Amino acid sequence: MPLKYKFCLIFLFLLTVLFGQSKRYKIHTVAFYNFENLYDTVNDQFTNDDEWTPIGAQRWTTEKYQQKLKNLAKVISEIGMPENSNAPTLIGGAEIENRGVLEDLIKEPKLLPLDLGIIHFDSPDKRGIDVALLYQKKYFRPTSYSNIPLIIYKKEISPKEEEVLDDEIEVKKENNNRVFTRDQLLISGFLEDEEIHIIVNHWPSRSGGEKATTAFREAAGKLNRKIIDSLQQINPRAKVLTMGDFNDGPFNKSIKIVLGAYGVKAEIPEFGVFNPFEELSNKGMGTIAFRDSWNIFDQIIMTESLIKADFSTFNFWKAGIFNKPYLIQNTGQYKGYPLRNTILEAGFSDHFPVYVYLIKEFR
Image (spheres, rainbow, N blue to C red):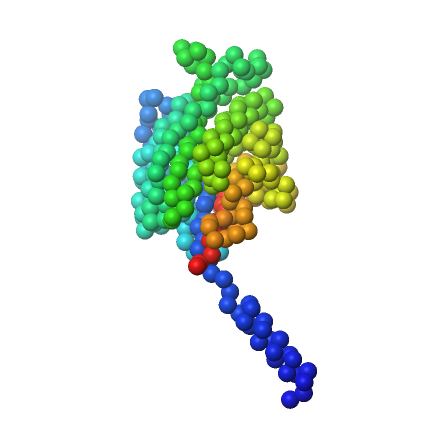
């Protein structure tokens, strides 16, 4: 055999030894989904849910409600595929009327085998919509959870902003003019054998205009940052994921400045936070559309302790927006938009869900 061929064989053998045995990883999908008006059909006298009843403006019947549950269950069961064949381990949710609708949801045939647990608190939101966390019990074990109120007082808001308080934000004069909005849900627990913290959010909406309501979301960002700082004071290497419908995009002040989210890994300081959805926003992607303009209101942001190249523990791999064709309106005025509820039928949501992968190398 000619010498040059012997060298080629030796080279190929070395390549096989070095790279032939690919690394194996454990993978967990972490997702967030705004369920868009997940109401039951029962009129609750303590919340403004009148339109979501059989005789209400939405003509919200049992049949529509059951179809909505099936739709959401299909989406949740598929988020993160095909990279991860298992459904998400952790699913943050928003626009949830009560615990009962979540109990109905996790009993859907596509979700029942997952044996999902529920962490939920009723919020002071006037419409009665809350945030919650669903989790696969075999992979995640919660150790503590609490709902942390966003405290804002009317006297801290400019006259212009007072005029746009919408049906998601109620001023109760009997309680020192406090502005009531959704709580932030903090959960601590173990993902397999690693401690992790999750914050589920649904920040105040833009109803009345973005600029006029920005102070509300900046206050939410300040509270979010305070929660993260508190966790890092206890453990400087705390792994924290804050997820939700922030009603602001990656470049808005509440996210970029107040929360302090960086979009480039190399720029993140110690104890900083990383927002992988900034890159997706730069690519023109979106989770919600308004007047033919897309934005990413739904995001999963994490502490820099989760973006290390060392995968001996669970760390961030990549992020995505789950926007499969069946979730998209394909006809009419809103062609190309997320396929949401209408007066005629139950859809999915006016938001696309988002997700990140956490991976760990097998040892």
